[in-house]
Image 1 (cartoon, one colour):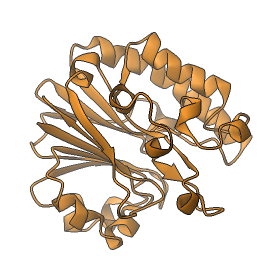
Image 2 (cartoon, rainbow, N blue to C red; image 1 turned 135 degrees about the vertical axis):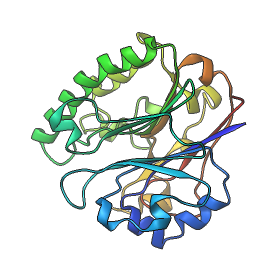
Image 3 (cartoon, one colour; image 1 turned 90 degrees about the vertical axis):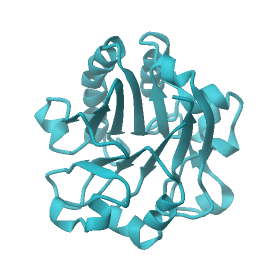
Length: 258
């Protein structure tokens, strides 16, 4: 069995102080994908760089206290690819691919467009340039799992207040249509939905810090494991860990018979 975890930490140092690494030791993961490190190499402790039994790989943002992704792997990587080859995207630390054998595990942090129209334009630009890379990955013949915060709720079932968010970043028609293309045209599989096609309130992975969203479970499903069909078909169990809170996101865990 192969266990893959994805978690947006909203600050690796903050999540560490809230018990993330103690929890991780109980999970026996093969891969862990992290987003929003909000740290540079010099901020990382030995335990953050390489938790017990895991090898750590990171792509930091150039801007301090911002973005950044990482992957922990039980096996040492055969190859690590940091970035997509676009300077503006890569300076924000949004893509890290770790290859072990014929398996690629990617930690992805797509931009949020909620802060301004300018950032929404950046988000659309990143999506447009990421799409051909998704096509190349799909055609590579490798087994690929892309983990992370896509900052898009795909369907109405993926957020509580979908009616009130139809004009808001993260649930805009163009964003949702792009996700549909990723699945229907490119052939990627949304692993959680593959296992839980009818889940609604239980599917959320992020809650705003405003208005008692966590207490009322007014959430969004924006954290995904999106996989090539062969490995997606091997997914057996998927869960969202909500017993402890390490950030405003909850870890998404999938076990594959791989």
